[in-house]
Structure formats: structure tokens, C-alpha cells
Length: 101
Image 1 (cartoon, rainbow, N blue to C red):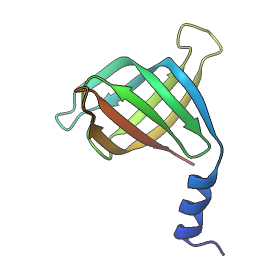
Image 2: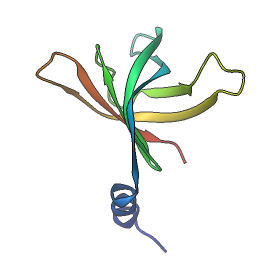
Image 3: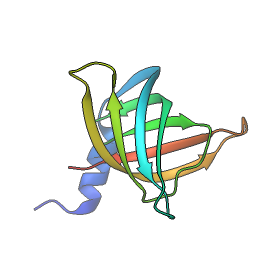
Image 4: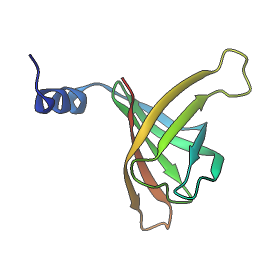
């Protein structure tokens, strides 16, 4: 049996792919029930999640749909939840998502 600490450690040690700020589409619903859709820069991608750069904050725990190459009929959708949203010196926000299993 694997406990949650082993899973966390495994995710942190997993390979991260530098996405070179590739634009992805994201969709989420805020606390007031309003749906938002935005193109944002994906900084890196790993088995457990993504790190993105956004010009606005997204609530921690918000459910997010990530769409790679949305204009392509073979686009891929992933689903996750916001773990962190940290304001950077630039005024933008670094968003960390954990992908749903």
C-alpha cells in the first residue's frame, strides 16, 4: 500500500517537460459561478500537473479544463485542480495545477 507522502514524492521527482510557454486554452468556473475561458502560457508539464503563467488569478481548488491545440480536431483535454496561485513581481500569476488521476 502506498501512502499519500509516497505519491507526493513520486510526483515531485517525475520528469518535467519544458513547454517553452506554449499557449493552451483553459476553462474554469469562479466562486460566483461565472465560466472563464482564456489562452495562457504553459511553462512546464509533468505526469502530475502543469505550471502556467496567467495575467489574472484563479482560485485555489478551482476545477480547470486544459485544452492543448484547441483549434485542432484531435485536441487533447486534461482536467485538474488549482494547487497554487502566486503573484509574481511582474504582476502576473504563476498557477500550479494537479491533474486528476
